[in-house]
Length: 347
Image (tube, rainbow, N blue to C red; front, side):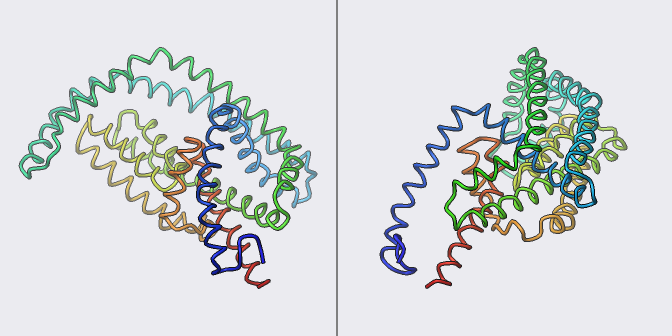
C-alpha cells in the first residue's frame, strides 16, 4: 500500500484533501521565484525552446549521415540567414508601420466616428445597452496615451535586439551542451517518472510549438495578398499581428483578428467586414484542415482544460506561462495517467 492509499480508499481521498492546498502553495512559490528571476528565466526558457526545435532538424540531418557538428553548423547558418532577413527587412517595416499607426490612431478614431455613429444608431434602435460613442471616446483617450510614449519605442526596440542576440547565443551553447544539462535535470525526478516525463514533455513541446509557428506563418502569408489587393493601410503590420497572435493557444486567433478588424473599422467599415470574413475563412481552414494534421490527438487535452491551463499559466508566469501552459498541462496529464496505469497493474 502506498502512502496515499489504494484506489477508492479513504486514505486516497484524504491525500487529495491535502494535495490541493500544497499545490496552491507550490504554485505561489513558483510565481514568486519567477517574478524574482523573471528576465533570466524568460531568456533561458526561450533559448531552450529554440535550441530544442533546432535540435530536431539537427537530428534529421544526422540521420542522413552528417556528423552532429556539421549538422549544427548547417542549421545555425540557415537560422542566422533567416534571422538576418527578419531583422534587416521585415522588422524595420513592421516597426515603421507600428509607429505610424500609433501616431495616426487618434486621427483615425476621429475620422471613423461617422461609421461608428451609424452603428450606434442601429444599436439604439434595438435598445442595445452600450453606446458606441462612449467606447470611441475612451479608445481615443487610450490611443493618445500610447502616442505619448512613442519616444521610448526606440530604446525598447534596442533592448529587444540585445535580448534576441542573447537568446541566439544561448541557443547555440544549448545545442552543444543542452542534452547533458537536461539529463541531469531529469535525474532529479523520481525514478518512475523520468522516462514518461522526458518523452512526453519533448513530444508535447515539439508538436505544440512547431504547429503554432507553422499555423502563425500560414495566417501571415495567406493574409498578405488580401491586404495588398484590398489596399489596406498598414496591411503588413495587421497580417503580422494576426500571425503572431496564433502563438497564443485557444484565444490568440480571436484576439488577433478582433484587434485588427477594430483598427480597420476606423478606416472603413466595409473594408473591415471584408477582412473579418477573409480572416475567419482562413481561420477555419487552419483549424479544420491544417491543425488536425499537425497536432492530431497528441496533446490530448479537453479545450476547457486548455483554457484553465492558460489562466493558471498567465497567473503564474505571464506571457511565458501562456506559451508553456498547454504542453506542460499535457505532460502532467500523461504522467498522471501513466502512474495510474502502473498502480492498476500492480494492484
